[in-house]
Length: 115
Image 1 (cartoon, helix red, strand yellow):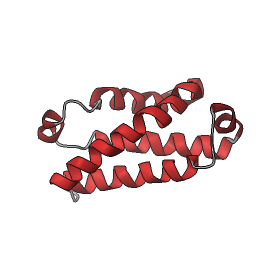
Image 2 (cartoon, helix red, strand yellow):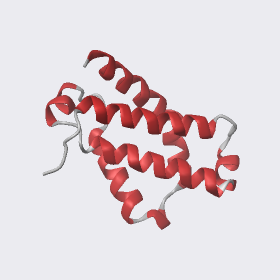
Image 3 (cartoon, rainbow, N blue to C red):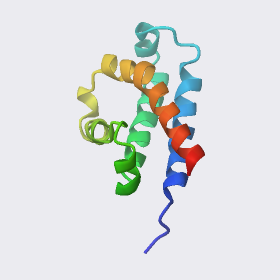
Image 4 (cartoon, rainbow, N blue to C red):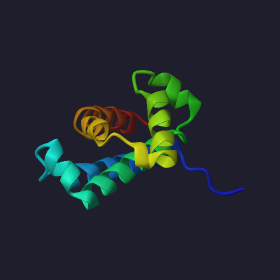
């Protein structure tokens, strides 16, 4: 059996992916710029998928203590991105990146600071 990461280690990794997303989007002001830069679009989408995938490894106890976080939606998004990427709505991805990721970052930072 391999090494099992702690919740704190997983959260740190999620925050690193979020930081990379934010860095990539610093020079992107709107959806048209996002969609027209295929490398940036794909990199941000992959990082979002990895963030969601890591959320699956968070312990049930920590998830239950933080039910305000959209754990089930993250699982569903991860599955969609992993299995049906070619049918992904990048407008939805853009909205998630701009609207939800900052909230998730704040929530994860708070959890990390309290672990």
